[in-house]
Every structure is written in structure tokens, then in C-alpha cells.
Amino acid sequence: MTESGATTRQLPRGRHGLPREQVIASQRERILDAMAAAMTENGYAGTSVAAVLKRAGVSRETFYEQFRSKEDCFDAAYERAVGLMLGHLAAAGMATEAVAVPLDRIDRLLAAYLDGLIAEPAYARLFLVEVYAVGATAVARRAELQESFVDLVCQVLGARSEPQRFACRTLAAGLGAMVTARIAAGDPEGLPALRAPLLDLLRRSGDLYGTFGAPAASA
Image 1 (cartoon, rainbow, N blue to C red):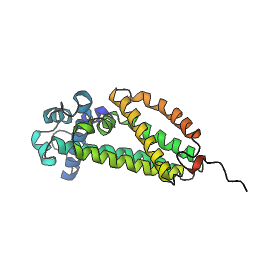
Image 2: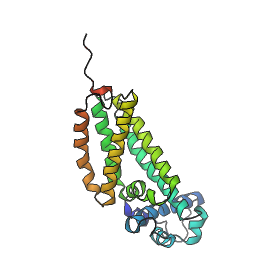
Image 3: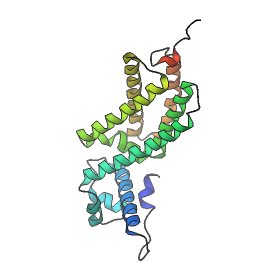
């Protein structure tokens, strides 16, 4: 899916014989795509329901059959962005189960995260930037998801102490700040450049982030 996805999945005009459930699902997906795409131009505050309707190609009545308000639509679009990202990370996680070297596993997870943002630039902006314009509930959800990412990093790097977990949390926060800056600046293509320096930082960290870098105990 791309920013133009909302305009490329219109249902056939006239009688099409599709089940109502499929029609509703298609309309909902187009509305969510349109919400994400519209905000790349005008931000959350500057995006009107009318702008979303125009991009999605649905009526106002159809919109309000599925969503109570613009904020409700944003919440649903945000959950879709989360689902897309978790899908990228889950696929990478399964692919790394047999990888023994922690840094190789982190490398693949990091690549999946960055590739996911690049693949879905409109949803990336919604997920990383526009969420802060919506309200405390959305921001709390964002923090909750970041903590889940911290858990994953701790597991891979063998973070066992509170100081190591705190270091992993700062690593995740630093990564989040850097990718948010790139997305906010409209530079998703610059995201891959973050990967090598982050891995180099981990290689030089000793046991700061976890036991993966600790020297082996002598016999």
C-alpha cells in the first residue's frame, strides 16, 4: 500500500454483486488510507472530514456509518498503522528465530522496522508525527507500543538488569526520535542510513545494553 492506495481500490460502479460485508470493508480501508494520505499534506489539525471523503471516494453518510468523528477515524487509522508495523516486525522475528548472533537478529529487526516505515510513508507519518496532535490517549498508546519494542530489544540483547533495560529504553527512544525527524522532514529515503551507525554503537557497547556483548567468563 502507498499514499495513493486510497484512490486505487475503488469498487466497480453500478451493480457488482459483492457481499455487503466486502463493500463495507473496502470502504473502511479506503477511508483509513485517505485519512493517512490527507495528513501528509495538511497535518491532523488541517485535515477535514471533507478532504478524507474526497480522497476515499465515499459519501459523508458512509463515513459516519463507520466512524463517530474525525478523531475516531484517526484512532482506527492509527491501529491500522500499528498492525502494518507489527506485521513487518513479526515476519522479521520469525525469520530470525534460527539466527544465533544477537547483533544479526537486531540488524534484521531494525531493517524490518525501517523498511516498514519506508513502505508506508503516509502511515509512518501518522504513527510517528501526527499522533502527538490528537491527544493524550493516542500518545499513551504510542508510548505503550514503544515499550513493547523495548521488551523485544531487551530479549534479543540479553538485558537482565535494570540499568541494561534503561539503556535499551534510551536506545529505542533515540531511534524513535531520529526516525520521527526524518519522516517529519519528508525524508523516508534517509532512514536506511541510520542502520549501520546504530549497529556499530551496539558493537562497541560492551555489556551496556545486555549480556550479548559481555566478555566470556574464563574457565
